[in-house]
Image (tube, rainbow, N blue to C red):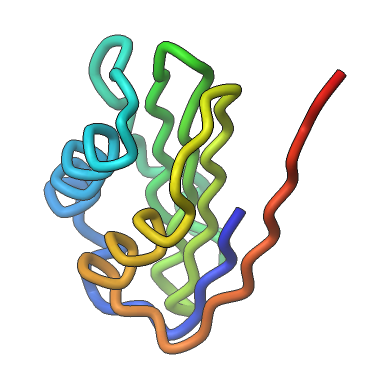
Length: 109
């Protein structure tokens, strides 16, 4: 999970969000299941912005982009291991956050 502040204008672009997820999925050796769902949520609310859901064969990748304050929140959830640094690098490439808080959870039932 990555909480990002100081993001650039790409967080307000469905096209850029789609390019981001299209690059991220194979970069972390995942397989997309269907097309990404990218919807503008909470119109008129301070938390308004695009939300992203991409199913992957091993779970999902979700994000919400709050254009009014330049923040973005990402959750890459998978039972298949991946390299977190690749995720951070691609987020930096597309959204250029100036601050990132990361939370990595290793789950095992």
